[in-house]
Structures are given as C-alpha cells and as structure tokens.
Amino acid sequence: MYKFVKRLAATISVALLGLNSAHATFNIGVDVFSDPGTYDPVALGETLNLSACGSDVRQSVRGGSTPSANRIYGLCTLDDLTDFTITWNLTINNVTQIIASGSGANASSVLNLAVNTGIGSLFTAPGTYQLGLIVDIPSTAASFVLPDSNIGFSQCDAGIRIDGITYGTNPTCSLSFSPNINGHRNTGFASTSLTINPATIPEPSAALLLLPVMGMVMARRRSKNA
Image (cartoon, rainbow, N blue to C red):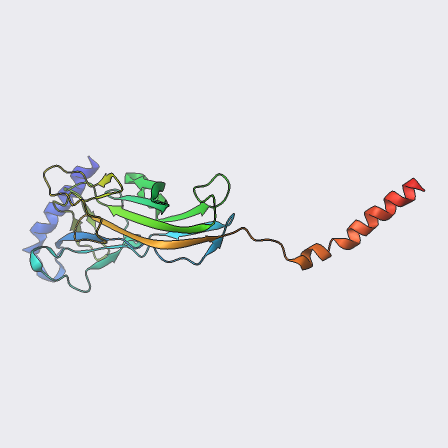
C-alpha cells in the first residue's frame, strides 16, 4: 500500500506539470553517488564513527545528458530512505566482511554508525583496512520525495557485483560485474583506507603516580611482619 501511494504521488506530480509550471513538481531519474568519508587513524579498542552523509543521489546522466548542478541531493537530507539499502563493509588481506547493512525502515539506522574495534569486533588487529560503502536502490520502480519537492525515481539499473555479492538484482536490466566507483546507476560504491594503530600504552608518567600508593602498601606489610 505504501509503495502504491508513492507511485500515485509520482503520477500526480507529472499531471501538475501542465497545471502550474511555476510551481511544478518534476520526476527526476537519479543515480546514486557513494562516499564513505575519510577517517583519521584510530587505536585498537577505540570506537570508530562512520558516516554516509557525504553520499547523494543526483540527476541521471543517461543518454549523454549533463545533470543540473542544483539537482544533487545529500543522502542525509532525504526524509524517506525506505527504497534504499545501505551497506558498510571492510576488506583486509583480500577478505571482505559486512560491518552493517540496513534496508527499508532500517536504512536510516546505518547512515551514521558507531563501530567497536578490538577484541570481539571485525577490527581485531592493527593494520590498514579498506572501508567500503554501497548505497543501493534495489527496485526499478522506486520513487521518493526529494528535498526540493521533486520526485526522484529509479531506472532500469541492475547494479554491480562486489566480491561475489550482487547489489541490484533486476534480471531485466543489464548487470555490470565491474565494481567501478560511483557509476551512473542505482548502486553507488566507493571505498577508503582506514588505519588501525596498536592499542594505546599508558605513559610512564602515569605509572609514576602509583609509586606513593605502592610505598604505603609495602610499609603496611612491613609493620605487620614486625
């Protein structure tokens, strides 16, 4: 029912074009641009705060057209992300694992993500990791309201295949098996390097602060033994 209402809203918007051009609502085919962000090195055991807010949807460039500069909409400015799937993954030593993924009502929950590092996490050792972000519109019939009240809609883009996982699976559309970065399609993929440093070791000066306490403990033991 919810999908039907959104499709109906898109259809009505087309009708409005002929009624009031000054305040018309346009259907805009969109491509997805992924930006996982850039991050300073963190020490093993610290919390890593991920943000997908640099990602956006933008006017499609199909047919050789050039998108208008003002038709770029930040992912975190969209009120409705139920047509999206957002996936964070990491790669180290040619092994890729999913950190977190959200789709439909859960898509917005992974826009900004706090991730633990260290024991019990996917970041178990110091090193350089490849942090990847996939922003996908799985349906070729998706439509959603853009911040300027225009309607964004998906097109027949089947998506891409990354490390054996296919994102965007409509069999009637052409599938690209090459994970080229931020192609003109319903699936945007990009990655960035992330450095995890060894766990922080307390400064020697901090240990010196414990010497008076240790001295008191040793003095008490001597007095008891006397």
